[in-house]
Length: 563
Image (cartoon, one colour):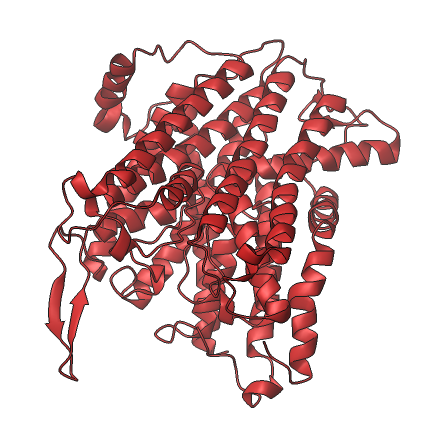
């Protein structure tokens, strides 16, 4: 590892830490209701949207109505995206006359983008028209990210309010999240990306002559606008098949650095927003610290594995599948960040990672996508683990568990367990099914533990709403399109519904004043305990699966065996 690589990694984390309070403070102003500089720009549009959908933003609902509104909204988005893929051939902005998408691939893609997963079993440039990419996928990139923020806002209100059943207005939350947070940042970032060489046009595909004299078709299209929100919204779906390793999506070292930073920008900032809105900035920084420690430890292990001597490759670093323009460090930093942040974009092939590096990417997803995680979803997933932590701490000292002055009782713990187990259930059940079925095994590129890891990664990515691909697995089949699609639905809404139920229950409770016996959630003891609960509860569930996948592959690789 070169000194330049180390400097870049340090600069990455310095900027992340520095930008967190700046953006987090702005986001808190948006949702607390204070004046902010974007209000004159989009305030008129916000009012127009409320008039158009006939919603009164000040009319709040209980958690059941909030959940129903969220589910109906996502169902409408799914239906629209599903239909335009089936009718793509007859819609405008299709310069290369791409045919209609098969129904099972359309189902998978629609579920994928509505759930903020952005798993892609197809090549974008040969499957989807500009119309579907822009009006379908890019729009859902905004709305699915805004949905995650809305759920987090509802949870925060449940924690800070007392003796009420109101947790907010879903339509207001999703409108403000889109207009004042996601849209301005995406416009700015898209302009920067265009300046770096990311394409943004509506041209037909161009045919050029290569140096060897052959004819090659060069895809065109409005890529920058989708790349901006795919990173900022922790979506990850690529405009092109090779995602962020494609020079039209990620042309320069500077664009590579900015796109990685954009993945974590909003999830990190929301920890500061969270601390400010619940009345404890120190607690917000505590949550940020837990996420940062887990990310840095995972990155360190992954980098060590990639740069360690390997007898199979002549004791050289593993260059296969890496982004050769930017080097091993940038490839590993990206793989760690994207799997930790529920983003799913890639600038290197995860299938070619060393077994330990691949395991870190897998583990980041399996822990529940809480190491910053998705926009909104990462933080409310972390709160689920915080609830379990304070509950366990309460049992240890013989005191009623409390969090932010509210008692944690059986209902909250039950909902937290349901949320965690829903994702785990989807990952392990579908992986087991695919591992013993002809339809699941026929699509593998590798045998042995590596082939098992390909299957395990696919369902972890789907149920974890990550969307990154391990590659080496042909997932665009009837079997995988349906099973991965249902895995995404379980992973998304199996988490959201319990979180909103917790928000509703907590909003009705009174707040107990702090006392000498209150378990503090803003010190190093809490940080260590929370990390321990995350690794034990979140990690041990998958230890057997990891053991017969990347762990045993690493041991066999050391003895000279590959798959």
